[in-house]
Amino acid sequence: MITSRLLAGSIAVLALAATAACTKNDEASWPTKPVRLIVPFPAGGSTDVVARLIAERLGQKLGQQFVVDNRPGAAGNIGTDQVAKAAPDGYTLTLTTSGPLVNNKYLYKSMPFDPAKDLTPIVLVGEIPLVIVSTDKVPAKNLKEFIALAKAAPGKYSIGNPGNGTIGHLAYELLRHNTGTQFLGVPYKGDVPAMADLMGGSIQAISAPITAFIPQIQAGKMTGLAVTSKKRFPQLPDLPTAIEQGFDVEAAVWFAVAGPAGLPRPIVDKLNREINLVLDSPEGRSKLEQFGALVGGGSPEQLDTLMKGESEKWKRIIEQANIKLD
Image 1 (cartoon, one colour):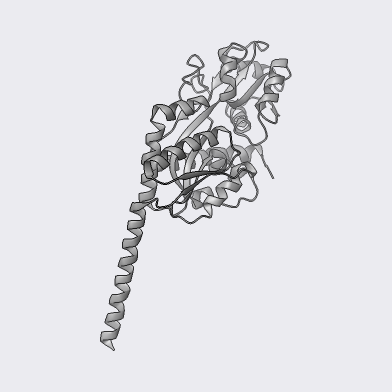
Image 2: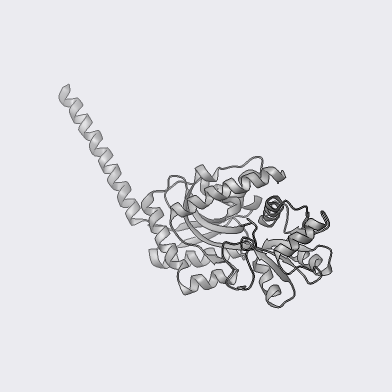
């Protein structure tokens, strides 16, 4: 009886050891089949284009196809949720944005996943800072002068944004809160109608991602009042940051690669290393710059820290402004 028990115990230990060894071998040899990279937005956008470059380069380096799968809907929640609910084996990943990774949790009453609990951060890909722009119809050459004008005439100066709950809207609320200035916020359905009204004089400024406004500012058709990044934007070196002008306003839309919770560390490290190499290449930098994005990179821990910090900041602003999308 004792011998039988000892034999059974030995078999169990050997089975566990064999399972652990197989798991380690699987992780070391990953990937052994095609990997799905879900982009929770339509094809053709900046996130999709960058995802396809990364997928192509990963496929070339790791010897398996990385297939970009567009799953748009619910401000990125639908596609990101598919990754959150996938098996943590490295064969379902996402290149998603700060909306599903941070902001949407506070904008929607019900979320199908919790990004902090259901996803594994892998690497920050890039970030697009916001810009606050005006025209020569407003006698302000920078944000400091614009704030002074608005404080002297509360409620007179309006700032448009690309839509309710967008990062442009959140940045407007952050600006309003941190400067104690009474603006009139005007949401639009995208950048284009907001730009038309700005040029026509219906609104006095816009808060939105910088990409669409770079050529307008460079051509002198619009006045850049401030960029909302830590440092000046390389393509517009003469445009000061909001922080430089004395206003604690920092905002960006950023995008990152993530996997399901529980993704093995060897797979995370392999992905992080290879994607960093893509981002640091001339081709990677050029592709990001094409969309007005600053190159990301760094460790999974740095992305995790970013997600936590952004979560705290935008939770406070969203609750104070009572912004809801459903």
